[in-house]
Image (cartoon, rainbow, N blue to C red; front, side, top):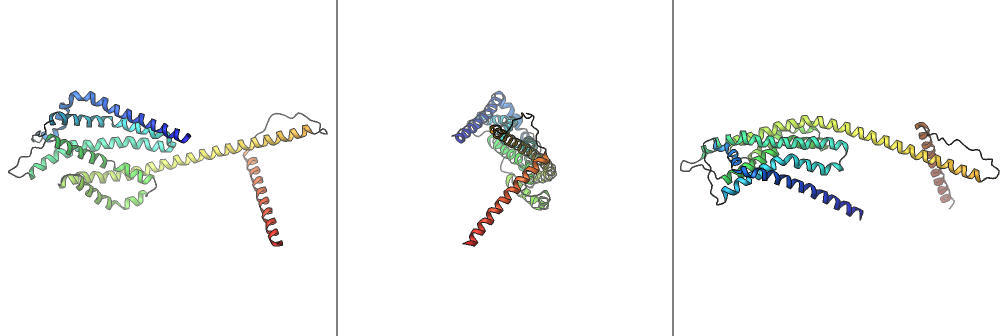
Amino acid sequence: MTQETGFLTHLIELRNHLLRIVMSIGVIFIVLAPFASTLFDWFAQPIVSQGLPLIVTEVAGPLLIPYKLTFLIAFLIALPYIFYQMWSFIAPGLYKHEKKLILPILSSSVGLFYLGVAFVYFALLPMMFQVLPLFVPSVATFSPDIGNYLSFSIMMFLAFGFAFEMPIATILVVTSGVISAKDLAKKRPYVIVGSFIIGMILTPPDVISQVMLAIPMWLLFELGLVLSGVFKKQIKQAVKSREEMLEEERMQSASTMAAGASAAVVATTADKLWEDDNYEYEEADDDHRQLTDAELDAELDRIEAEEKAEAAAKKKATDDSKGNH
């Protein structure tokens, strides 16, 4: 019953955080909705600035496409709050040193995703729309539809946004102990080749776009190697401090238990002496002196030695009994 109640509590808490996320995106969307057309004009600057016109081929395109873009912008604006809600949900179950690691990683993830989106908007898209018209046949006119332009741009935003998370992935792999930074650095040639393969898959079929994704991924991988050493050192210090704290708590608990046991023995002895008619009771001092660490260790060693001696005696008696039979 207790486990079911705890699971239900977690579900309710998760629902509350998800509702806050949805409400935050909804509020931002409502605020931005009146400016949907203006936002799309700003969004189309990378292609319009190259002198390329945009057309509308869908019947509901003039209404739906700008609002789709507005929803995407609302999501990007709410992204820090979304990560904060995720952090609030998982934080109670983390240790102190894990909290010190997760919080900067979440913050860095948001910043790197924004950086990837900005890189696409300000650098990649303008260059792509300078190169792509060069491949258009002479009998055709290059005039993308606003819906296709939005879908293509979103794909590029997501591709580069997640690709720019390379330092975070590197830090997590190294700090989790899956592989050391030194061993990961030896695999640099594979990372470079993999970056170009990912660039080839995620970008249009031109060399410029591929290179513009592969080189930042490689550089961010190198940045992740540097930062992983810093984070791993901090984690080791945090774990060491936590182990020392747990050891101190264990010693305090053992000392308290030993003190309680000593007090119980004294009380039992006093009761027995009080019941003895031949014993003249003398009132003892109520102040109790707590055992020192040395006395506590000596007492624990004595108890352990007695237990070992008792176990050895039982074993000897068993062996002697078997020998007689």
